[in-house]
Amino acid sequence: MSEKLLPFTKNQIEEIIKKYPTPFHIYDEKAIRENARNFKNVFAWNEGFKEFFAVKAAPNPYLMKILHKEGFGADCSSLAELIMAQKTGITGEEIMFSSNDTPAPEFLLAKQLQAIINLDDISHISYLEQYAGLPSLICFRYNPGPLKKGNVIIGHPEEAKYGFTREQLFEGYKICKEKGIKRFGIHTMVASNELDANYFVETAEILFQLIAEISQNLKINFEFVNIGGGVGIPYRLEQNSIDLEAMNSGIKKKYEQIIIANGLAPIKLFTECGRYITGPYGYLVSRVLHIKNTYKKFAGLDACMTNLMRPALYGAYHHITVMGKENKPRDFVYDVTGSLCENNDKFAIDRALPKMESGDIVVIHDAGAHGSAMGFNYNGKLRSAELLLRENGEVLQIRRAETVDDYLATLDFKNLSTFRV
Ligand SMILES: *Cc1c(COP(=O)(O)O)cnc(C)c1O
Image (tube, rainbow, N blue to C red; front, side):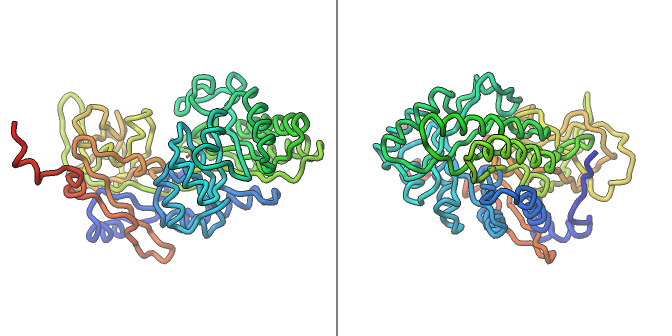
């Protein structure tokens, strides 16, 4: 069982809404920091352990700066994310650049920033060499194929577009060694939102064994192993948090059995989690606009899937609290919807909730990762603001809401009058 607590009361959120109209995302800095410290401490036995926060989960420089202060790097996968890391003061080997189907300018910037470049395909070795030159440290993303089962978000590894096959790994490191590269890392990312600690222990074991084989075979040394992100969070009340201690002790044991026993230590352990780091500490705050009774009961919010797409995209569950009605019986069944002209624009389907009215404040939990980040403009919908609840209770706007002018900014209305049809 997980609890769904809120870092603000109804009165406090009403005060915040007076200044920042709904809908908005609000992040809890205190909880993010505490969670980050705990995450780091769990893996502290590994000298050089580093979490590279997956920027795509919550691409906001304020959050990145907080996490950087806590010792995290940034896992970037696009030009904009690289630039955001740079602007936040995260550069060099504090950036892991894990992209796929990568355009040359992105490799070029990653190289300029001296980021750790994690290649997704063997053909990218020559592409990188041609457009940016080879770096002194290289990492490859491994796709274990049938060795590993995937899940609904990421799919089966064999079907996934990511990574090298096992044979390609041997070949790729050989090519890079022959080209004079001396520093190596290995990476994989095969799960998303996984709550089973063993899954990550198995992943680490597969990588450790590969490191042992490749090191011996090619006479190269590995500096780090990046076991990826994908550590899950309990979206549902009946789910439990992942047992990080078990995950850690399992990985440590495999490290001793494989890495230390083969004389390959020290190897730095890296992770690149997004969801686990900010997911539970971000909330989408919205208001009920309309209650509609037809064949079903609908609670229509002033937020829509532009603000949080996960339910529509994966049928994902997000817990919902109606402020001030936390202790009322949940004896009404609603579809909680947005205003997009798509019938899957629903935050919840057939959800038991207290009786709602127009004006109620609704908080959607666990929206701190892959929430605001997935925002889009279909149907002329605008992305909402992001707020930060600071440790001293102050609220800072860390991204303003989009305006209609923003939406129209890429259109040229000046030439419309002379455009003959
Ligand atoms: C999305 C992604 C992550 C983060 O995934 P989470 O589920 O948020 O931990 C990490 N690495 C890569 C390469 C990704 O694509």
